[in-house]
Every structure is written in structure tokens, then in C-alpha cells.
Amino acid sequence: MLKWSTQDLIKHRSEPLHFQETLALKADLMARDPEILDVSPITVTGTIRFVDGDFVASVTLGGQLVVPSTRSLQPVDWPVNFTFSEIYVSPTTDKAKYEDGQLLIDIEDDVIDLGPAVADHILLSIPMQILTPAEAADGTMPAGKDWTVISEDDYSASQSEAGNPEFAKLKALFPDEPDDQ
Image (cartoon, rainbow, N blue to C red; front, side, top):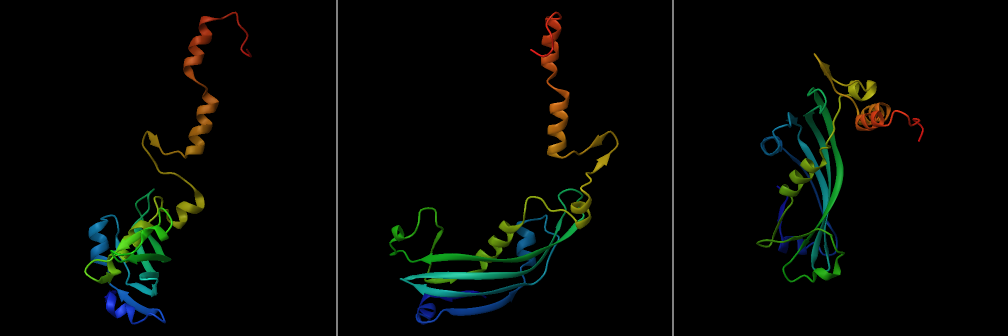
């Protein structure tokens, strides 16, 4: 399951190791994020290249999550379809050859395990706002008795129209002054 020893990967020095697997990550992802309602099997394809003593993994994920709408909590099918890359380095690697801020993952016990990286990237790919197709199309906000949700744009517009009530109180102190000063 997406786990190789570095010795096996070094054998692919001249040509990258190609892999393709289908993973059942439902239990793991739902345990880590209780808002996830369902997870289809995730197809994982990619390559691992041996480059200058380090290993570069390029991974493409495909599948589907079911997550709640952030507006109505209705279930939304969210496609998982993206690619990520990671660099695995040995303890003796000169990390200065990489750019500042580039994520480098230390190889532990001479084994590279992409399983945790796949789950992490799926969780990180879930956006902050997810809407059902109907919510996205019509833009209506939820409302209830004595309350309604408004967009940030509507809120900003209402604030600029209403003006600052504190300035209105100050104007009352100077009744002889015109309003346009």
C-alpha cells in the first residue's frame, strides 16, 4: 500500500517507479474530519523518481467526497481530482540546495510511505466554503424567524447607507452648521 523501501526505489534510478492503486480511506478520513459524510475509493497514480540522492513523488488523486454544504448542511458531492508532489530526503542530504520554504520530508527507517501524505492532501483540499449547486446558482441565504444571513457585500452596502450613528449624535451638538461640511 504505497510503501517502498529506499533500496527498492534506488533500483529505479534510470527510470521512475510508476504506481497505481485504489485506496479505501473512508474510515481514516471520516475519523480525522467528522464533517465528511462519505468517501468513494480513491484512485492514486503517480511516479517516484530518484534525483540526486533524494526521492521526488508526483501523485495524482481521483475520487469523490460527500461533505455538508457550509450554508445549509445539505450533502454535496465534492470531486477529488488533483496532483501533488513531495520531496523525500535522507538525513545526509544538503537541504540548502532546495528553495526556502520548500517542504522536505525526512525519510524514516529507510521507508517512504505515501499513504499518510495522500490522506493529508485530501483533507487539505476541502475548501472552506462548499455550496450545493442550487445554492451556488441562486445565491439565496438561509433565514428563519427574526433572523437572516446576508452576504458581506450586502452588509457593507447597508453600513455605508446607514452611516455612523455616532456622527449623527455629534451633528445634534451643532444644529447651525450645514450638513455638507
